[in-house]
Length: 327
Image (tube, rainbow, N blue to C red; front, top):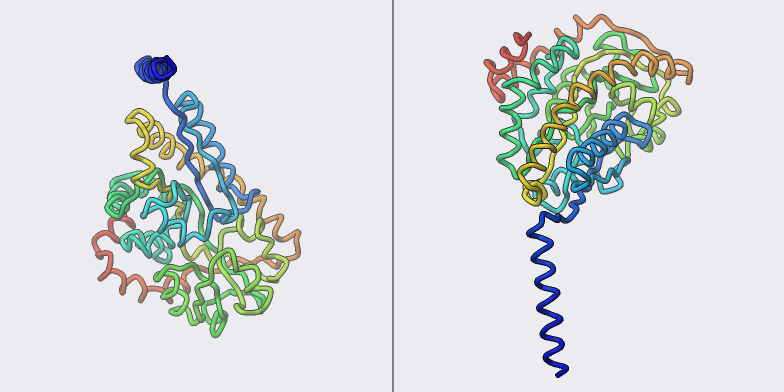
């Protein structure tokens, strides 16, 4: 009798489960998204908006949990994990990504972009799609080309007004070959350091300076260990958002479409957010005690021309020209 009861109970539970599936009940999928920015950085702000919209548009079926400040690991580790499928999502930099997908490094060529409008025209168009396909070939899906911004030099020695002022300086750069070649060409000693270790490297004098958009200078409190900020705008850095192919495969087709559409939609949102914030950020940086100066970019453009020439053989001179001519 007891065996018969257990069989009936088991059959009932299985039947109930199958009925639930048949009536459209679906399990919630949680995705972890890591980034390197502080909790006060715009990376966190746009990531939270992404999570909110995905939650809303999937009826709560897909939840995105955000981990700022490299809580899930360093950027190289997270990008590699995303390609391997051990990490769900990452908001990273194209410089880091270029170590895995070399074609993406074209975005970082010095003085390639005129302004933010030029950036969006390139990355939201066929060229951005072409680079996204290269990412997909490595085991991840590009969700969107989000924003980081144009980069500027800070240091502890003196204002940088001409390329000659960088001579002999140890400048921290991201783990990307274009950055290394650019600053070596400018006469500095380019020194790759993980972003999570940068403050300490500046504080201890391991490097003399670094280069980043104003949001990072402010939120990472680099003004505490650097005296000078020079608005060089030498390189633009995008912030691609990736989802591993395995995590993407856990979603339904409708959920996949929502994720990608939302990611692309927030690219322009993120750029506009950064543009609106930067003027106030520079004021805060000056108020914190840093001496801020502008430069005449022509001397820097001329000094870095050999970098463009070198990478014409890597990325293709035609692609570089297409980017420059995009309107």
